[in-house]
Image (tube, rainbow, N blue to C red; front, side):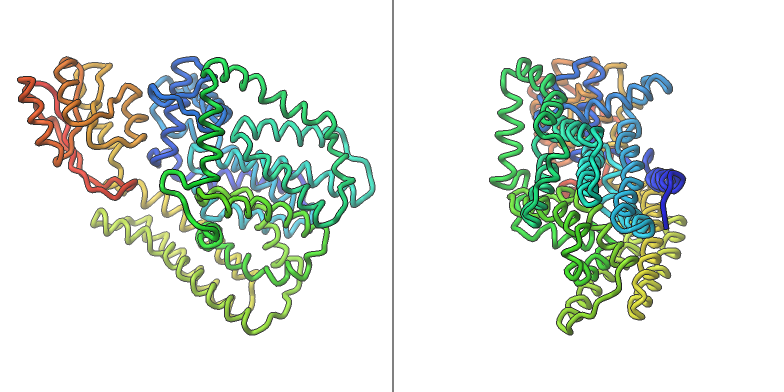
Length: 550
């Protein structure tokens, strides 16, 4: 089967449609996403496109590339829909949506180039429905856009690699695309992009002891293109920050993650392998079952290329101290392609009994995750809201038979058919989650409910909310960058000093300290409403009241 432009366009359209559900109803997800959103909004409002800030603090974690993209998409939406979209989540998620739309057909192209069209289609499907990819493609964070950039880098490497195999010259545009993609990656995430950019050719050289094809990418002058992309902004931020950006972004953020776990994310090696069963579900079991075939085909140039893509990146992020599931997302397209090749292009090899036993254990874990996907939405709604959603029940009715069908086909050794069933189950489960479950989980939607109450009772157009008990970034994004995150005693003082246009958000447990401070200033307040719920970021139950001076 040969894929043409129509196939790739249809794949992109399908990826676009599958990434749409819940994009407008999904609230800003603490804690990273609203930080990106708020920093991008402040960039638009201040017209300062060099120095990235969250409220009055610099956000020196990575260069400004992702903030430019989100600010650009939001500015375009603002011209069409007006300034009210600045407080909406969906404009900031457009770069992730567009990136996901391109990633899927690009994965299919790489798979088709290496193993044929059927493998490319299967690989695109496995990646498109994987849990981590679906989650990241719905959020206004950097990871989906970074994945697209790394796919462009690997595509350029693949072109040079296959030209070597065919003994034909590599076009100049391939080299330009490679070095420009590295430069864009540096503007997105800094040195992280060099791991796949240089790790893949280095691993290939170690496997083959042949680096002659590297010259096809014109490294003698290509690095100048890469530097040209990032240097202007680097010079500007160096001047504006007085060197503070590189001290924080490289010294504390990048090297800090290598040396020790940041923000309670320090975990031992093996974490990414452990969570792979969930993060790549439903493809995770089929990826595990593909290992014997991959080992048998390990000397094939195509397999070597994909292993050189996966292994360096995976090892680096298993060895650094800080670990989050999305760190190895750039390897998922390559894993999907190898998995698809084992399902479509290669015969199933015989394996020893001990391997069958391990696959059986992993299959039980995979089944448990699948059943959890079926029931999780309905159970969460009942536990948190004491209700059921018709759409969630419909999703349950659609996913459960498909998961059971996949299990039955696996027992009959019909892996390809089982994969199709599992992918169908994942599509329905994700649609049910974003359309029927998350919009109805009011208990955990604290920030949107607080913002609605604040808008209803604010005394001035430029009123400021002082929050002493709830300080999630989503609150700052939805209420405004002037939100004050201070303690209950300081909140009372702020109300005293700004009595005309200020309101305070105080949890029940902080009210005694708040009241005591009010007595000190001789200030009386009126309660305008309460919001109760669960802060899912830390598991704390909150009973928040909004107060204003009498």
